[in-house]
Image (cartoon, rainbow, N blue to C red; front, top):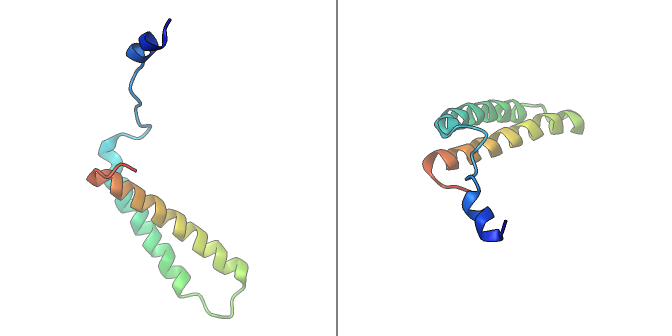
Length: 78
């Protein structure tokens, strides 16, 4: 087959998560991210660095993916 024939036969990319779930995922991830962030912000100042990092990393990941799905839900495809 030539390159053109391969191009014409190819199937479009399908997302592993249906688009109808983007707003729900955005809401859940952002809500969990804000809850995790609030637990990080109420940690006492005299706690260990490991405890702070173990609270900050999940909050950052949840808020990051929540923002990503929020963008996808409103049509900003990144």
